[in-house]
Image (cartoon, rainbow, N blue to C red; front, side):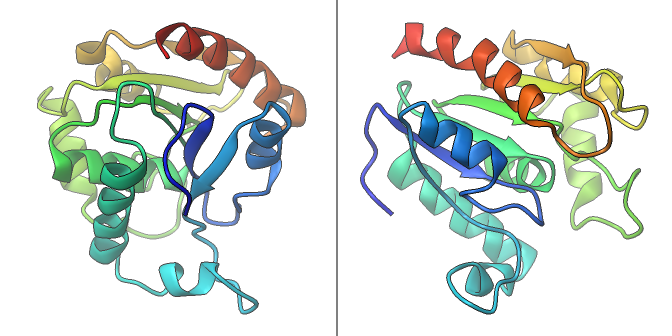
Length: 194
């Protein structure tokens, strides 16, 4: 990973995503250097080692990355779906993060999955009793996603004075127009802070 600079974004994609996928490519097109961790298991390279770590070791690695590459008020962190779940656990472990953070359609529970998520109760409790650390956090999700826990998202961002934006997105996968709109909303606002 490269050193932190004003034009880098630490990104955690979903389980099947990669750093050069839809979101990463759009960030690159906008001139940002994308660094982060790929969660999918790849036999051809860098994703496989991280994917094979236990959940706790994955969170530890993300904590180290955030401290090393995104630990300033000028840093940007973006996480999508299960990447957001890992990121939120890292924030719980760290107790704070000074970066500007955006979650796109974050996974907060196993409601739409067929398995139990690791340490799900820990995250749920921190959000529910408002003990989740107050960080600069915004959420963008699809208004068409009937499984999105909107009330939980609102509870999560309440102590952060963050925003939640609902965008139109047809189908279960993120569309290029959805990603562009989400970044169009978030990136100009965080540039004002940098």
